[in-house]
Length: 213
Length: 213
Image (cartoon, helix red, strand yellow):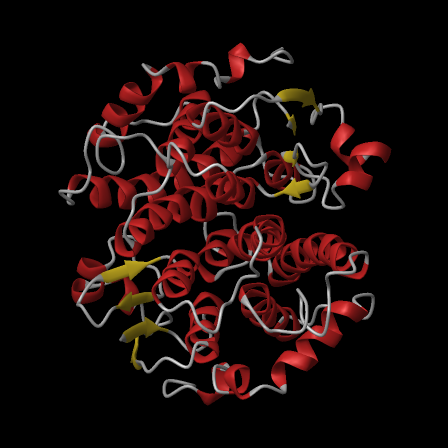
């Protein structure tokens, strides 16, 4: 398989974790977001939306959208599973995924921050305030959800790392980069640390990627 | 089942469509977002994030996050299916879902618009510009994705309505409410019209809900 991504893109980071947890082989094809490669010729043809990541399967199929790619990997390569067995627990994991990947991340990604400082002309401090606001709102809810549920274990759901963890770790990485205060999220911090002890997560870290700047 | 939602919330609208397509019975418990009921006592206890929708299953389980709820319905009540049979096609449908539900919707929902006009102090015209920008960027990509793929049929994927359509229709409804120009999206408009001919979609329309204002 071939993964088109960018070392610091947290959606690429998610997919790298999922691939590693499933012990799948893949090559990386870096797409430099800062240089705008995602908006140009060859990549744009592959993915009209011009976002990373995209996955080329061994059969040559082109898949886009990180969560769609993760669900594909789960269906195509079921073991080890990234989702629990029963439907209600799977819904819990996907709700955690939604909280991270739908309620927080889209508000804080590069193209949105660029719109805020460009078209809306807001200054750096107000941009940071925006960033931290959505992290805080989402992490407040996530901390309550994790701390208040006996299904939370060493990881977001039980003692096996899975899809929720693959979304949590890149979001914490982002939050740290932007200097967010994570003091009031002990459960999130504990799970983040536990994940980063695993080689699947360590190998997916932005700093470990071929295009790390 | 009991659905906590709000008539105009497009994430609630999605879940209503999914429930209707699966011909499932459900009661509605309106949560008035404009009056802030989602941030208060009883509902907040049910859903710490304070967002709609939430679904209470027949077994009394509380599920949150619209896409997690839809995937749950698909697993628990497989027929009629809202996803195609093979993994690559399922990934395509979930990529369309991601484009709508992750790349467009979170940027344009009520809490974000409130932050823009409140904390950031932008005026109504700039807010509308923001709204239309993300619709245009997402719909440009979606139109290309739909028009350029032979798997697009009467609906987003083939000739059976499914999860992608359940996300598309509420997004078009929102775009129309905010006066977005949809002229350059013939495929999106065609599929939207085809969906709205179906009772499952008509019955889910915001105007048909008990709390419609």
